[in-house]
Image 1 (cartoon, rainbow, N blue to C red):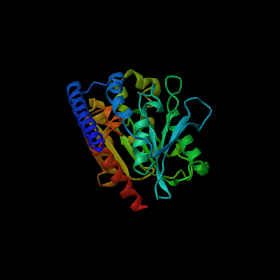
Image 2: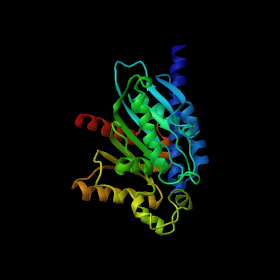
Image 3: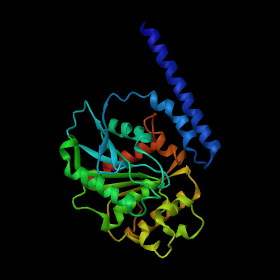
Image 4: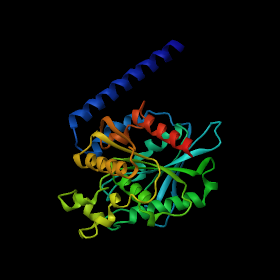
Length: 308
């Protein structure tokens, strides 16, 4: 019986390995195409095959009155560690789409690594325009600050913002544009993955039409809405990433932010090009197996905690 089980597990392992290898080739073949439905079809089987029993999840908590002002809480269990840092993850969706329910894999993945994880949703354009996303980040952080008893093992003084795509834009806006920040927010670092409009000058060209749904069409306002024009404010450790098969604008935005931070600090922030991944797989691959990007994030978190 034991031999049968071992054989079965070996077959499952090689099937999973083969499937993951197939996904990598598909990503290469697709190049810079962003196809949410196709990506979900690829990654869903791997997500569903993962054992998440080491994580406690509380769904549909609220940090505001709007239906989109909600989050899911992923907490490590069965650990001797008494206090965990917190990641707050903001999804992408070109400012007009996206939901926390699509990114459960991110919550499970980092909770298994000893990080209390919050996967949040925020109000969307075109109804809710700039700076609604940034304000929702502030509202989420206010909830964390004011409700530590509901995050029993999370250290609310050690919060890392982790944004992807439009979510990275909102996270960066909160980190750098001080007028939106709340007191004692606990934020000590930020991971900004493939942000879309750090440099709002891209809006003066032919940008993604959905970007205008959030930032508007008045180009006189673009400079004050640019993250790059607000870097003189708060200074915390920043990790900037982009995917090998990201569209050109995402790569441009990442490099623009990195260059601007270098000019500010006279040293490079942590930066990574995520090899063998596209815009969506950059985060969809979490909780499906080994991840170089995850290792980099954990290294960034640990080095930041040592500084603190």
